[in-house]
Length: 116
Image (cartoon, rainbow, N blue to C red):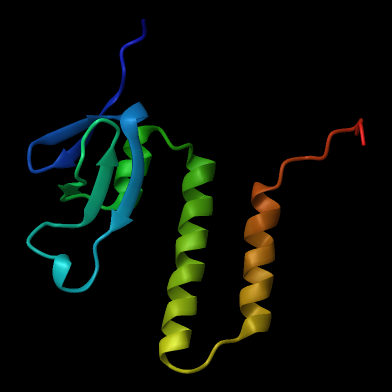
């Protein structure tokens, strides 16, 4: 059996990469003092608090460079949308174009032979 990759979460905590199933960035008053991300690990009832960002954890889990670029783009899009919504202005045309570019970058090629 191949050795499983361990991911450092900070605060002396590690988790097996293949057992991490969700990451949630901490915001507001929850964030600070080194607290950055909630990490859900299979077999552990409560989420662990990591001192590392979700992007860093994903990278250590083995996320490919292409996936990281797409994730960064998606997070940037979400951050811009949230900021624009807070300011009461949302440019749906711009957001739509950016979303289509992200979706096109993740689209799988259609099978040459479709059954139905």
